[in-house]
Image (tube, rainbow, N blue to C red; front, side):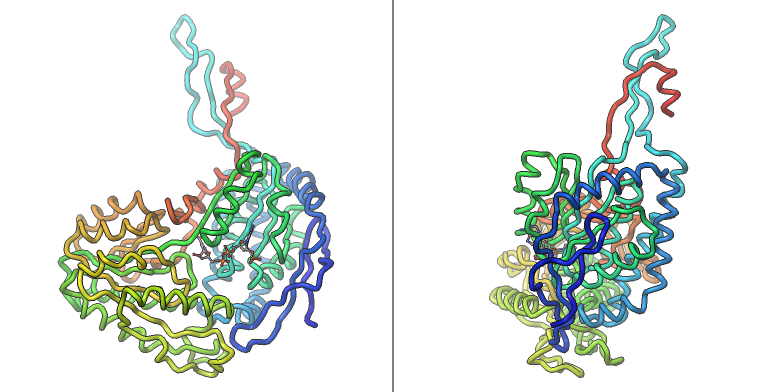
Length: 522
Ligand code: NAP
């Protein structure tokens, strides 16, 4: 049997008492390690995090905690090779795709280390200016209300998805730890190894106070039950599990604060008036192909629906397909391979089923099944080629409901022709709220107008015009400076967005007092 990874809870490394669940190499099929959370004392472990970890973190200033994040960055940077090896084995990703997760996580941490330093030596934050409640004879305020943001007294439980075992941890842990809130991470089982190793390296390096960072690998059973009123839970994953979290008594009865990042059917829109072969047209084709194939399409932000003017449907299909055809698929250890595997057999089955579901309402424009696998056995490897689907005319875009409802979590997107701008925006809205939409065009006013119209439906609108062609950060790349999350179907959550992320880990309170007390507060 392979090694069983230990959990870190209550300030110590502890094994589960069960046989464990195996994690596999999705390309070679062999078992790698096991995880198990059976019989852990969750209530005592959570109490330790709150009492020891929370108190130690809150005793530090923002600047001190920022320095602590910088120390975490150093530890992780010194072990990058190990993380790449784990990602290749357990996620089946090529080096560039592992970088999105590993270096993306480290970059996010270092961004929060810098942001935190700018908050200085304070231990709480003022929220806005004092507001007058009562005035003296001279009409000057004598009694006022000052809002403050103070670190939450509980812990932050993160329940994460399988596709970002590194970034998914650090994009949440950075603002939580900076806020002074201890973290318990429960990674998705399929890829828990990388998360566990990173936590182990950071804990063993002694750069965090005891109880500040814990990891529970394996079953999620009992985690939600162990939460207390001042704890927060941040969930990333499917809409189905999100519904279970939202309806848990700890949320409905104890008001545990919840953030949900769920699935999403993100869009790319080529605005009207762009000729085939124009720069905007080519930028769309390039970005769609990149988004479909990066991490084998296993990104919550990946482009799923591609909207083009009706007259450009055939040319767009051809331009995107030509790029997809160049994608070599297979074993990430082979230098010629550009796209590795899906994460598991379960995901391979889910992607095949999702494709069949969409194909009932769409034609195949580029067939992923035609990609021969490089250095991989098709009977074992969880690899699929990229598939572009489409509906031939704008009436078809209206008729197909599945494409607006179904997130196939793999290298799959659907091309949808639209009649005019209003029609395009109406079709995008049928996604019922997404994480991100990207716009392609050369008319600045038209791009700005469309961005504002799409903003209420998205957490982020990414505009790719010729002026930004060489500099833009990518439709699907989540930058710590920008908000991540989306309304409606996307879960209604908000993460990142620079220092805005700290709000979730602070409580806001109004202090009503006379001027000298308020001056002492400031
Ligand atoms: P999932 O099946 O919902 O699992 C997510 C996490 O929830 C895992 O850690 C899972 O643990 C845990 N879990 C399962 N049942 C639970 C329960 N009853 N109570 C508490 N936790 C439970 O999602 P996934 O398949 O890992 O991830 C893929 C989905 O995540 C996609 O739909 C994708 O769009 C979405 N996603 C969204 C974002 C975003 O930021 N919006 C980012 C990445 C992914 P186990 O693994 O042990 O079952």
